[in-house]
Image (cartoon, rainbow, N blue to C red; front, top):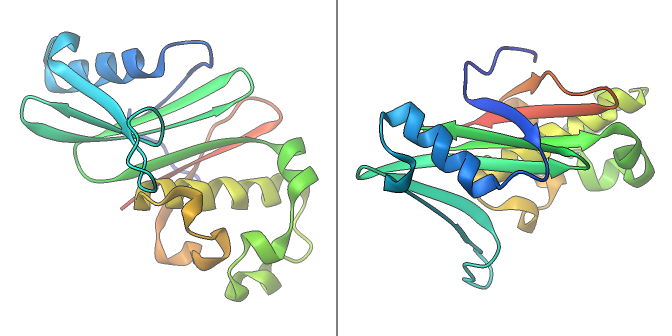
Length: 168
């Protein structure tokens, strides 16, 4: 499941302004001024614009975006070719919260038996990336997602972390 993200994904410092990063990346991608890029949030549950899934529009084009924060890391994804989702996770944090009944689809449980901490964290990151690409986030239970039904690639990640990109 490892493949290059072909400029879709970038790793940043968590303290950077995610919206400014998205505007700059989208402007570069489309040959626009960052001021011509609109970004925001939309919560699918309550409709708030103060939190929720990130969105972007530029030059009359919907740009698909995703972001994930973990500790000192911020991961962004930008695409004009369709929905994307990214996730970065600390292996130790996933290990503390690991529950195969919560994370894995019933068809995935047997194959995941015996997986080490890094592989369990990678499974978690892949699931969250898919949920972000679908636009539902954790409102959809992780165990409802079957990974082999989606295009997901593992990404290079800082030591002690795993990361994934999903594209629909």
